[in-house]
Image 1 (cartoon, rainbow, N blue to C red):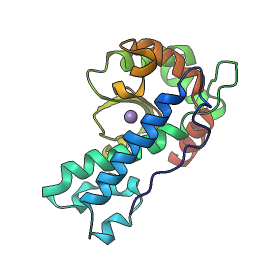
Image 2 (spheres, rainbow, N blue to C red):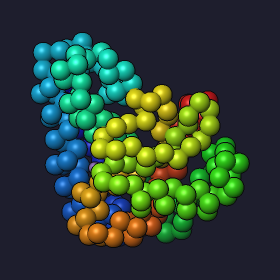
Image 3 (tube, rainbow, N blue to C red):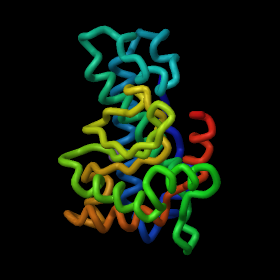
Image 4 (spheres, helix red, strand yellow):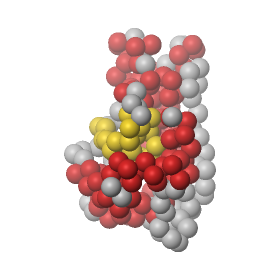
Length: 203
Ligand code: MN
């Protein structure tokens, strides 16, 4: 059985960048539905549904072909949103930036933190349709990548450090069609401590 994790902060904690109503609908409705669907699909398969969701999506061949796409979509939706809540944090009033080894790796890979942000934002703005944009560790190297729908980098042997949800449900109430404004605001709530911790675990 999978369970919906509580947000690690209040629903209004990310204001004014991410609004309270969006957080309620996104967490309590969208994320909750992925969890419910996943449990329904795996009903009776106790060995599989006992696996951590990241383990489940790391090797989808564990489940039968008949349900594999549904498991991929809903387990991916559960895993991606669970990470998304944790990769955000209460805004500090000053721009949030990566520190330490992650900062060094970002500078070495992308030239500077600002160049990294530009490249990431540009992919997030241009990603076609529903999906996610990621900073991941791929074979020891940092790369920016995107996935469609609820596909996860974990399925592709990558370790995700940062992610933004670019499904319309993530921003439409506050930003309507202005995805670029949502992305610009989102940088104010990135929890770099999450990414720093996962970089050290990936190495
Ligand atoms: Mn979402």
